[in-house]
Length: 439
Image (cartoon, rainbow, N blue to C red; front, side, top):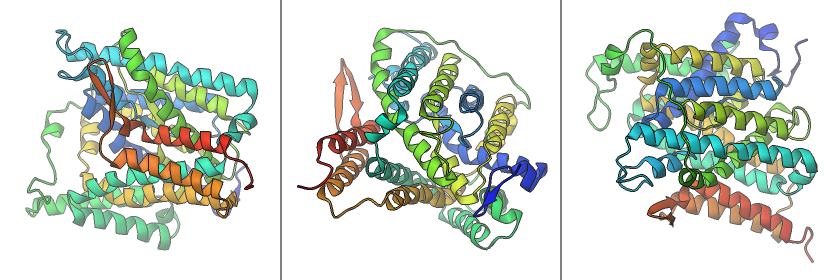
């Protein structure tokens, strides 16, 4: 039976119909696509295998989450530094070994595969001692500012992407704004999809009229589309294992687990359900996330993680049907077997993604503030001020400050990629140590 409260839609098939629901799934696919394929393009992994990894991984997650949590698992940026520490031809752990880049990527995949079992270990611990005991260490005074950090840390990506062509970014932003605030019916439900499609055609018009990006480059580059066949199998590779690579990769599992917990808290707030202590529960969602990463990494894909971009879509549209995210996963799998279609979607100018991300990333930060407000955090207490202050300064300082690194052998591991994890750990420690009430 469909339910609707405060405009929230839980059963999109019953309340909106099949055609509209199919479009909603496409909207979520667009929301995750740009960031998801960016990781393989930077690291050298296969884009097609990545789409298979995140698509099947998302379905694995929903199986363990019993189809209750509207989440999409995309490529994890947290593991990107670990991949580079293994594969870099100059500074990587295999530099000078004569090993090919493809072999190095296999060892990186093996390392991700092994460390993803940390998720399963954490899920077992939470199951053993109880979610409530674990959540006492990460109350809203910790999770709230951490979620704000996630939104703020994503903000530069929106700015940088928009800066390539501010005109297109403004058009995309304005369309989202108009559709989501003043739109009626279906227009209000698919503001992001609508914005991307309309702005794409605007970009095509500007391109044909001779307009360029700010750097003088063409708005579109159709070379990749022209060279792509309509159908093609993904280039799967099998993970290989080395203890040194595993040790290098291990710290990055913490960052994505923290991100996972933060996303579950955010989704619980947005959906007005308790996915952490209630159903399906944090142990099951962590297990699903970990096994999704296992699958993806074993066949040559990246680590997966719950995506804030899709959480932002849910907050904006109020469509909370998990099946819509499953549709997005199925679309990703189909795309993996159509190189030309994937090339067309990837031809979307960065500025368009940046324009729609202005609202999405801000939404994530706003949800973090909402978490603290609804929990009635008392900021007259210095303990609460200190916890929030340390989380913000640590996370933002490490992420945006001068690069700080530590060495594992000859490999420098920058701490900026671990800023969110370190800030969360400090917040948890301070929450446990500082007295609950001021003396």
